Structures are given as structure tokens and as C-alpha cells.
Image (tube, helix red, strand yellow):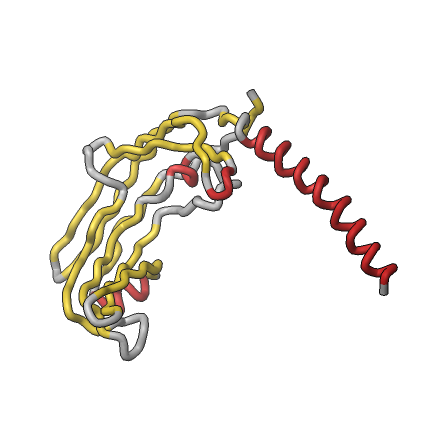
Length: 188
């Protein structure tokens, strides 16, 4: 028994410094990785039909490298600043309603829902694929449900084109989004 305990203690004492070295070196290197391509413009065109009326959204997403920031546990990450040519935001509302039953969770009643176009994350377009925060363009639904006696909680989920048409009568006519760049990271 004492032999096993000694083995565990020695193992922990050997692994702990190794883990610390990997953490420090990884943190140092990641904070020095810079993208080759630091600016990009990505046009898109999204058109849909709702209640017989056609709506069109055309814009250009402008993305620029803004340096490094600190995330969870102090890990450095690349920061991208994005703007739209029109001055609008990356989230475009398509449909909203109040006091409706949920189409995603049976038996749930929503205080409000929003269906919106997420034009994609800057990390996606700039080829920063090692990032955990890297989502392509998609249609999202946010549902606000009662919580407790006076509060509420809002959750968001991606919707498929079939769900969009089946539950809300929204038909996507045009879905044209720019492809991401092939970017490489270099130590500087």
C-alpha cells in the first residue's frame, strides 16, 4: 500500500511541473501567433419569402485583426473586429412573435421568439479555425421562456431550412455567402 502511495506522489510531482511548462510555453507561443491575412471583405446576399412578401439582405462584412485578448483561464486568443458596410449589425432579425407555443420543445410555451440570420463569425471568415468560436452563417431561433415566478430565460438554437419552412412558412430563396480565406498563423 505504501509503495502505491509513493508511486502516486512521485507521479504527481513529476507531472505537475511538466504540465506547468506546457501551459507557460503554449500561452507564450499562442500570444505571439499572428495571421498572415489581417483584413477581409465578405459580401453576402440573403433573400427569403414570408407571407408572400420577398425580403432581401445584401451587405459586406468587413473584418480586421485587432490584436490579442485574454480568454478563459488567461489563455490568449486572437481578436477580430467586424463591421457591416451598411452600418448594421451581424445579426439580422427575420421574424418575431410573442406568446406562442414552442416548435422545438413539445409542451413549452414561449413568452417570445426571434428568428434571425447570424451572418457568421469573424474567426470563420478569416480562417482562424483553431478557435472554439468559429461559426459559419446560419439561421437561429431564440426562445424566451418563463423561469421562476417573475423571470425568464432565453435560449438559442440553429434552425434548418426545412424547419424554417415547415414551422414558420419562411422560404429561403437566395443563400450566397463568401467563402472563408485560407489563413496561416506565424510567430512574430
